[in-house]
Length: 108
Length: 120
Image (cartoon, rainbow over all chains, first blue to last red):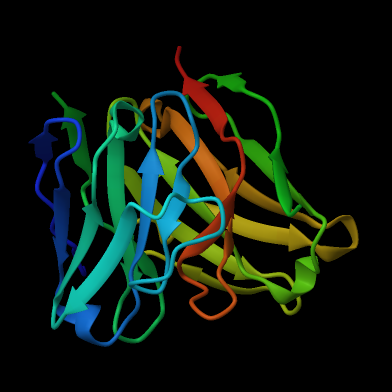
């Protein structure tokens, strides 16, 4: 079945920029959503439709897309951004959804 | 604000059946898909399936097809996830989430999660 690939972990120092990639064959045709999940909490969407940011999400979160790879960028990382991040999209026929394996962001 | 409220934690034995619920409020329930997501202990998110309350159109991930049943009662603004015979490997947190209007397989609002523990 269809898969999305993310790096298992990313580490950055406070104030630096963190980039998390997500790759999959269908990403050139389907939008991607990004979720942040902190321990013991439900996921929260931080980017939707590749590049859109929901109200209430800090402007330091941004998304971009190029071909079959999408990227979540967090500029000026803060300690509170330490969390697991998941990309999510759909298969080419839009029958079912799929999550990436998740990336643990560590703020050093 | 849009809200999804899930039923409480469950402890079951292998072989038992179970049905958990997800009630939507503060939005037009029949106009948005409702999906279910599994998170096993210490693991990532897994997309299970989704249902459109207006006509009960249901889609399943190939990994979960035949393993669970998703249903809805639109008169109650409630979606359900059920098992006919639980296994220990079904132990997980299960989230319901509302499908985005333009990208229904992805989610914009999430429930708080229901912990299901299956143990003899």
